[in-house]
Length: 257
Ligand SMILES: NC(=O)c1ccc[n+]([C@@H]2O[C@H](COP(=O)([O-])OP(=O)(O)OC[C@H]3O[C@@H](n4cnc5c(N)ncnc54)[C@H](O)[C@@H]3O)[C@@H](O)[C@H]2O)c1
Image 1 (tube, helix red, strand yellow):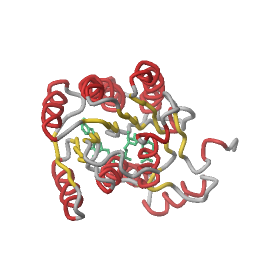
Image 2 (tube, rainbow, N blue to C red):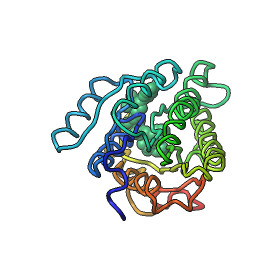
Image 3 (cartoon, helix red, strand yellow):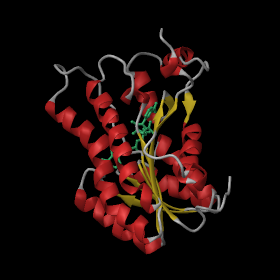
């Protein structure tokens, strides 16, 4: 892979203070990208910047609520000052559990707003900048739950199915302008979000080991494995991929029982 395509270019990563987004931020910075970490978690956002800078990379944190148009606009105005914006990863996310009957309207709204509407709001602000800079790439983080799902995860699965449709739609709309849009559908990945979920079911490590055993590969994924896929989808090597859901799941979605 040509390692220089991101050097000196601005890469915006929502949810960049933790888990998959943080791994994407680390990978982007390691390849010379100027990373903008967009999150509501100020402490972890600043810690992530410190870790990147310690390794000689370039990053800044923008305390931004991706569900707020004005907050997203402020972030974009700041990011423009850093250099040419060419890459965006939408990884901010919220996991909620419940059926149609047990999910409150507030939980439904929060799940759809953070996981789906935010991608619309952020992309709407950032796309014109990517276009002005001659094109680039957008990667949205969906989930295997957008294609197949567990029970009792209705709002989350709905939001992630929406991310797949949104990414397909965006892919088609911008392909001719040299702006690639695809999404990733991860299986279980070891992040604070997953560990929190595991903790609700019993001993965190034991539950994670058990979940790993359900994946044909015998383990859950690491956030770096998702970040490497995101780098490929941003890179010119994947230019012929348009609006695709890329499943990275250790085989979980392919088994019948
Ligand atoms: N971990 C998994 O197993 C897994 C599997 C499939 C998909 N995903 C998806 O990957 C993405 C990242 O998940 P993760 O596991 O790294 O979770 P995480 O909880 O570690 O990170 C999510 C980040 O999003 C941020 N965030 C939440 N609401 C926000 C808001 N309104 N504005 C700005 N930032 C906000 C959080 O502060 C956090 O830093 C999510 O979209 C998630 O649904 C995760």
